[in-house]
Length: 128
Image 1 (tube, rainbow, N blue to C red):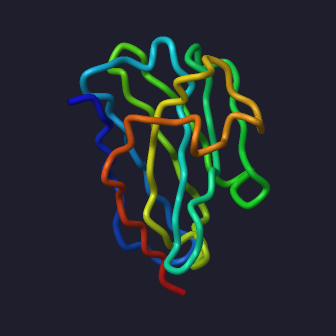
Image 2 (image 1 turned 30 degrees about the vertical axis):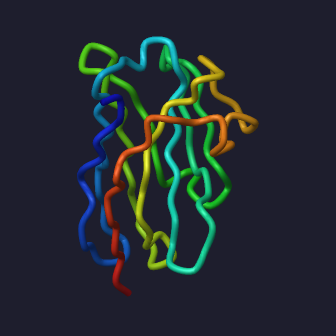
Image 3 (image 1 turned 90 degrees about the vertical axis):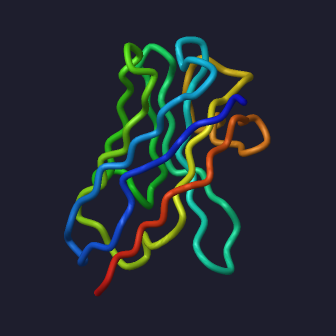
């Protein structure tokens, strides 16, 4: 089965940090951009960051820019999301997926319907 496995979530106080991992299973990120999404209770899933297959191009939404950093280790076929200065509004289930239509990343890349190989997500809870 082709999918990703997210890990690294947990409970942290506001101002704290977490590092999420997204490991590819059954495929490689070598040819696909990768996106991180999150879904808070009662809200729609939103794309927050993406990275191109080469790792050279990245994008962040305004809500996380300056606090989150996305990176990729193609040798391990793993994408990371370093989250610093976390806020209670960052509380959500975080998902990673591969953009099967693009190898490069831009603001237009964060469309959920372009992504596949979704994982089960990892829960992030930020207390105030």
